[in-house]
Length: 500
Image (cartoon, rainbow, N blue to C red; front, side):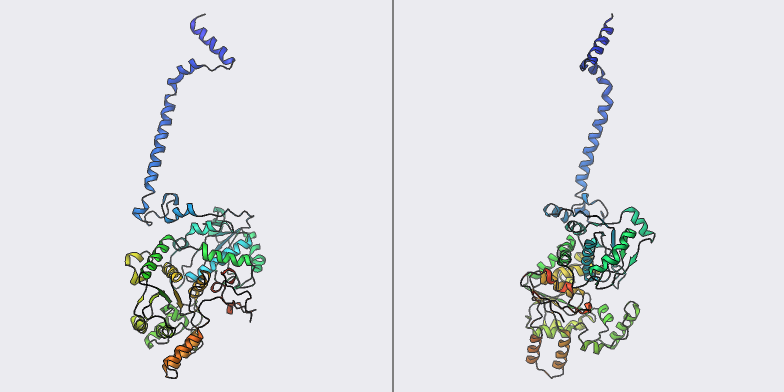
């Protein structure tokens, strides 16, 4: 037998006995070189990609968010990224999902804010998945801001994981149905109890898989709801609806500038053109200005009230205080003349002419435009909701908050300041104020009498603990839940709600 035959026979015997053939593998080694080279190339490419990604993640700090908008968040370094590690994200609540709820919020920032809180509570109660809300883009302000432009969307989703599942968009199949107009779009009945949503809305969601709400404002009752639902509304409002890092950082900068000069008062002066046109209040306006406001009111068909008696409305306390009336009230309440007055509002109708008496009484009148540079606000300038968010942030931090009209921002900020420990909030009694102002202006009251009466009227209107008024059958006239979220407030608390 030749040598080669001996080797083959030996190999055969070793294989049969389960012995590894080392000599045979060593001879086959040159045949595996292409495979080794292929693996080496894979390693080189992987290392190169990793290096590129690590370097690219630092680019947003240099280029800014606009250039990299839409890139995966894992590549973008942001203040939120640093917070994720520190944040205790709650465990996900497991439940049988009954479908999806889409909502289109309506109104200004704070009207939408309160509505979003209600929608989370409704989604939780119905065991459905909430799609991140759409914000109103068709209101008077024509603001194109999306949810993520104002609120920290990832924080919103993660902070509520233990309550309700929230997604950024519908699954593909339901999304196609929505785009084809096959999803029910409805306006829920205002001031409804949670039983309405179980009896009327939940069957629709189960039938179609998804339902869209076209309005979110005041769709849930103030009272008569279970404590868990009320507390969830508070959790969303005071914790989950966190402004974007950009808005918060700018707000902190404004507060820091103000604090350097001492305490400050935030005046929510609702004397803007749209507010006056909507309300029909023209006190102190010229005839030309009054005509301009009337034309604007008629230009918007969804503003249903057209013929308005301004004097009558003012006497009933239904008009925002004028800058002149506001100056008198602040003086009567002994607000320090040197106190910084930060105006949280848009452009005041009538400009400097209407602000003259306020500035004369309180020389340190400022706003975001005077405290910040155009570069600071250029990204927010044409987005009224983002500017309102900045004012909201500063309002919470102020030593005193004074709204001149009982609107959505006034009420939501009032409630938020109560939640923060009943921070000083002066709630003007408009009806009594205009009566006293008129008496002072016509000489019926001297200054001391006027000031004494103003103080007496506002003795119990300083944002302290109080009961929430319940009016059975008239929920719209009750104390608004978000202005006095009694169930969530720190001590001291009023144990029994007042009923009329």
